[in-house]
Length: 121
Figure (cartoon, rainbow, N blue to C red):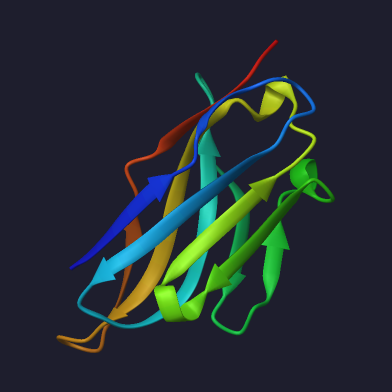
């Protein structure tokens, strides 16, 4: 199994910045892709950004130019730097990873517990 532990959420004023971190641990052979999703009250969970093992990235249109995803493969950690935050960025942010387990060399998808990001004055 793989555990994803997120940190870095909180309350920030509009225009401010936050950095989310997500560390993966467990019986990991490799991590294929990692990403961040978010879910606002009354809305469906949506992709924010994702990054492959090779470093290719993909962003939601709403965050392009403001958010940057990166990863440290040696630490099995993914980061989301969020700048110029807006009230509409308020949501629970979830870390996501597709990892190949060392036990059976099969790929599985995992989710973190979520971290609250609130953008408000």
